[in-house]
Length: 176
Length: 452
Image (cartoon, rainbow over all chains, first blue to last red; front, top):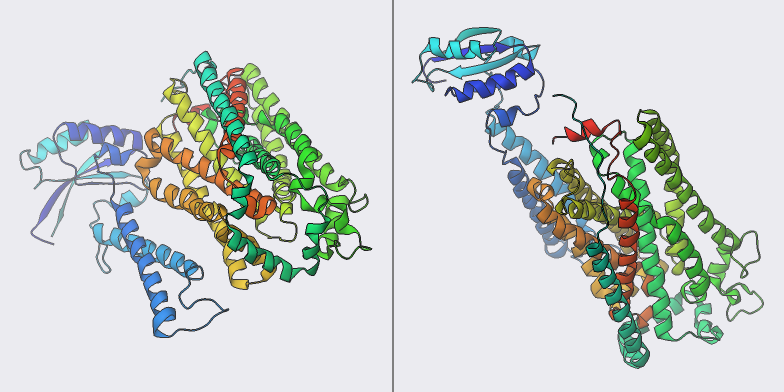
């Protein structure tokens, strides 16, 4: 990664405290980098002010690609490139093409969605994620605040805000 | 979050709503009368319609069964086309609305059996729709006796008379026990009628049991009524799985007596189910807009919208599963069903409109999350689905009876409006006689916090 990164990391024991803390921290003007939790917390995306995902749009576009690809492929193959009589039907007859079209639509939209999600979430192969606190995979909720983003506030001030919001401990973490 | 205190809510069947339904009913009667008059006076024109394709179909049928050519002569007392058309439309509308009634009960039972919490606020609407069942049962029986010779070809005794090869039909005779057992083939269809009576009797019995427990829960509270209803629902679902399929064969598929499809039970169920879901959603939206059902919010609408979306796709899957196999196998006695519907006016445009109204439009319009959460979009899609499946049933019933003489005009629309107004009247007046939701439902609290 680029230059050294310095973070203040708040540890929370309870998801209700966490949801409350997120609102408090954000209203005091601190920008939260990310929150990690061991299980999905209901309403956390709204508390963090995240915009709705645009993944369904990507899924639709990938699905349409699959539909068009499947139809063009089959009509070209069986209608023009190598016409064959199957069951006495026309060379390019639509009904038998539908199952393949359906499958390719589903396949491309699923694969496309997974791929898009991985790229958007920066989950490349051999990429090691930043670990703010290993306990976020066990029983603690972890809130990370990037100090460079919150330049208007001092490190101690950010630590105080996190502590007051209900964090059970507040640590510092640097990445090289 | 603390326990929310919920007070009982009741729907009032206002004179305004009654007046609107009466206007719909009156408009239906008016259209029916005009339609009947037009059909009686203009019968000759219609016989020319689709004459070309009719020849094709007749040849196909004739090539299949040499006996079929003798049918025309055997028909001693031919009913006038306009009367036949009226009978067909009556039967078709009746089957369609039987479905809406039974789907009301089916929806409630699915919620109990699945132990669903989200639906606690909307369950009384499908329950109210179930009140149509006793009327539907009587109507079905009366209509069957009044119209069976015109609608159900298999009721003619000459088909089973082996001594007369001109009219004997080997295929139908082979199916005779399914209709007439233990009676004589061509007589009173004892088995068929017994099924009809048992289905309606059992459906209504299950409905009464479920409703009784729901009403008792309102007064006494506790979880015992919910547990009882869960068991009753599970039994009903087993019974409905069989009875809905057999009902579909009996009341719809047997019209095209030579033809059969193993998908047909599912097909009729899928059509009934998605129509019922659309009507439930529409009534919920109507009640919310009238200021009722504050406990139902966008999250519950979202679930109802997902139901319509999912089962529109399910219906399409069944439709296509039935069509593709018949198309690909290319067995004449099977393809004749679709040839009739795809090449004869007015069935051909309905055949394709069916797919646009019941698949393409719901699929595209309800795809996004927002569309399912907003009443404005649900108000557009639900009527499309309701009308679309009415066309679906029209094309299931009419071609088999009317052949190339079928019509879709004021007569059919008028009758549909009469049935619709009567059905909604029963539903809304039943709804006004009970609380709008169970205030003691064990999962009401869960429903209030439902969030998706």
